Length: 79
Length: 352
Image (cartoon, rainbow over the protein chains, first blue to last red):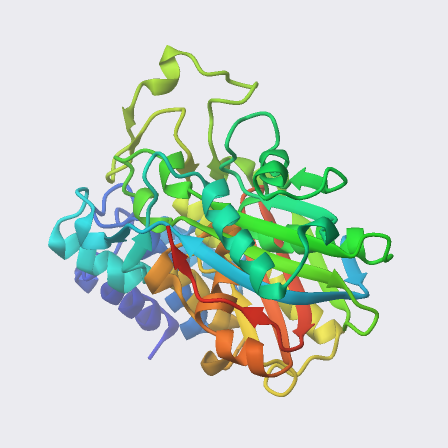
């Protein structure tokens, strides 16, 4: 599985969405169920699956699909 | 660097009191049954105890203190220090610890102090009391910790109301040259203060009619400026990162083998997502991490001593234990404490 496939799988599981929905508009303002509990589940899964420990600012910053991709790049995760 | 090695101070006893009013998540009008079930599963709090308006934290603590003093056989005249560790005092002034000195019949020579430090309250209380006893000029201390935190916030705030439970705990400490060292590491990040706060009611924003005007912030969060607030994401992000890094650094610095050298890890019971995350990040043996979140909710500073009462009472009474505690909360503050207990008095909880 590629890193991008791994990331998409996380989003699909956390938000119970379809892979096709993931894109620039997939963010906390547009996704109805995106609350702090879901964001915590998202960041927890990211940490587990990519074996990284996110800084506080990055946990708070994971507010959209695109933002997560940018944050993973900081941790040298190539997508 | 704010850490302390406190010598000559032993834990002699602990007990607690909760209000006789259990509340299940499904009892809370804000939730549908389905929402309550989801909350129970994700946050892990199924039950909590809420006091009625005529019961204050000091009442719960006084009940615990009286029972503990009697069980220990301590003469009240022998108690030198009384701390009241709470953010829900009887009044803005005077200090509730002074009122408790009188209620408990302690001598006029008692040193009293209120310590309003929220969820790190246990560490702050032990730190202050321990340092007051360590030289031996004061011999006995009562640390009373608790809150009626549910009433601090809005009844219409879904993000906060269901998280907190009420309690009052009493811990007895005594000067003892044979006691093992207590190590406490404490940290503060005041730039995060607004994540857990009560905006109006202090002197920055005194109470005015505006303080009572409720605002709908969406996602079921309706509150007024007089109500305590919790910024969930900021608090979560903080709780699963900074305390973990601190605890990891201390365990490594002290050369602690988490499997061989520690009997229990007592982690502040904020919510299940946070505690599970801390356990996983530190690779702790889950058998060594007792939970009572599901029974009591977030008890603030009383959370860790309540675990001692509700989950490891038998072990505390029967054998020496090596314990590591971790707490985090308003300020923002976070602390790690390593301490050893010898068999001590642990009384059953009381319902008031």
